[in-house]
Image (cartoon, rainbow, N blue to C red; front, side, top):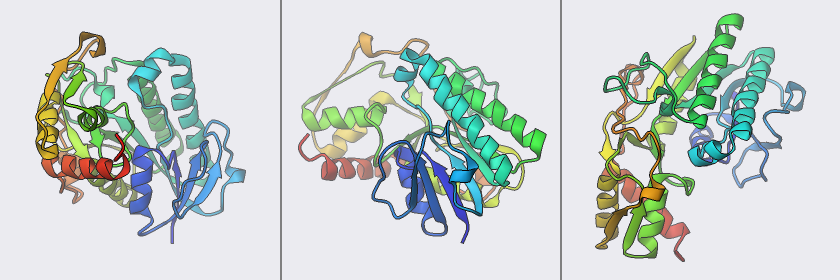
Length: 298
């Protein structure tokens, strides 16, 4: 059985990914947080300081998820964001090079910035608008350099707007659900932007497929190929919840340089045999039920 190392394994994407990987692989998790209840080998360590000597033998794959991903936090703490997201990535690449492991770098659609053309293909110009996006693009550039310089088996995965169980509170879907469960009013920033929402279950299946099938450097978009406005998501969730609510746009919550519409071109990943199975209505319903079960006191 192949051994897969997952950094940031107990984060949002990591937690859901590990559940999928455990069906086929032995998983080693790296995190600087306390051990989770998952049935894996856990190593508590900062990815910037980890060395190959601290790892079990015969690791065949590394999935690098560990990063600061809260856009607002990164904007307010640029040095910390760049240090963790860039230096952590370089250190994990160096480990992968030394142990000759296949490497998967989890990036983001934020690297594209304002789309020149929709849907967004993988060769679309990259023009990050935030510190977070810049840090992820820097990780991409370093990853590509390692792949070319050392002939590494390496793939970059650009995730679009992923949502679902275990999602962090700063994601817009989480914000909407929390407010929906508390009262009859939802206050957010701009309601008009449209995003490409994909349920985390579909995302982790795509990641596992790329991990298993790719043999040379490549970049993949992982999204639904459709976009919905924030207001539409609010309306879908309120209908699923069975509650009449008022939705208000608050200027202080709005982001600067807001992007009007983001839609992924997922032709590349579909050619590998992947497709989305969870539409937004089903996915938001599943997410809402998970929140109701785990946050019943809200």
